[in-house]
Image (cartoon, rainbow, N blue to C red; front, top):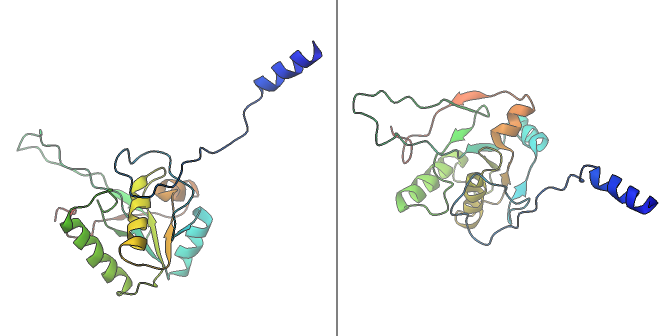
Length: 185
């Protein structure tokens, strides 16, 4: 009876905080981009908010925000004014929208390559930090693409993104997409 009571008591205790383990895929995530992400990214360094903030304070790392831009709804009447939500991001970040999808059109690949070269002075050893929102595969995909397709050597992936940054009370500023693909100039 004593054992049964102890067992029942243990069942009522909260479960230990065990983070859901998401395996790192071999390829890009192709759907459901807002979902739990892995704790790893082969070829990149995964950083938390404290490390991301420390990198930001140095001023030496290029911060790349890959949040996609919401398309203008096709069903809007022609005379409707479309106002996009402002993007509050890490100060100084470069916003390259829509480059985190699993499969990119060639125009998107060209945009990503050109803007990464511009941001890093074509230096594959330049430190770059990719982020989006928390639980967003877009930043994972973009960081993986920078490592595997563009050959960047010092890639940091910040999976907590602007959600984690904001919760840590770090500063944010409104940023605008780099003109080109996905930016709707």
